[in-house]
Length: 84
Image 1 (tube, rainbow, N blue to C red):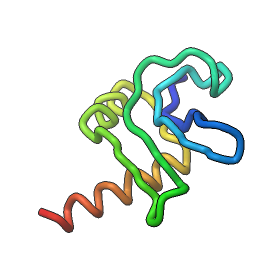
Image 2 (cartoon, rainbow, N blue to C red):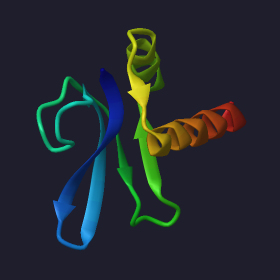
Image 3 (cartoon, rainbow, N blue to C red):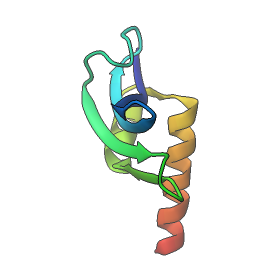
């Protein structure tokens, strides 16, 4: 089963995340299919960039977003609709 989830990057105590599509049976640091975006929780407010078109394609193919990624996608959709 494919999952859209966060993959931790960055140094100790300086987390930075990539939003990736990977096999749910693998470890989060293992191989992945595609990078969909990034998330930096240390910025104020936290910086999120997600390619929603690619994410929607993967969801149509059967990928399930984690709860955190689903919340981040909802925030990006809300911000993009408010700015238009």
